[in-house]
Image (tube, rainbow, N blue to C red):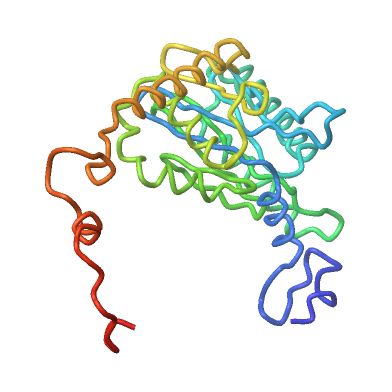
Length: 278
């Protein structure tokens, strides 16, 4: 409804009660390459799709370490994401210096959400056009949060953001109940399979995706290319074994067993056509 009259300022409400510039920022998250997060009892895994703007350029880094126990994956305007990462690192360092203890993940997420919300009510600022999947581990256990450009935040068992993320969400929704009891390696495989769903026809390789892990027995770190490729090769091997072990369709095999309807019809002479057969 007359959108071009109400989107010149972030604080101007449309007659429908909407802030169009905030919606534009959320749409920017949807246009970014996909990012996936999922957690179990002991670990949280983040995965991202790495896409280059051209064949001559490198891809944008989408996985960032914030603290020893916290990291993020992002979709949208990566430049905005780097600004938020710098803010998050400063907050973690300040809390460690003052209280001599790591900053709880939930408190950091609230601080980032408050910072993003200020940009929705100040006329001289625009909303951050980036969505953050925040993975962390603290005394309360593993956590996975999503920070929205609107200033809202949500905690998830598993979630996906970015372009073509609906396919990854469908995969996660079907299997999220099993993630709780998964091991670290199983969780990584599920993350890769979710990323593969968002890639659609593209081949999954260590060059077009990234994986980061944080858990009870390991600090947040990004897997190197060789380790990541070994997980991808394992997926391909399991897929090949499952294909070989799949039973053949009885209708397609010749020999024993009852013949299907098509086989029986071939043995009988064709009947004359009637009005009911036309």
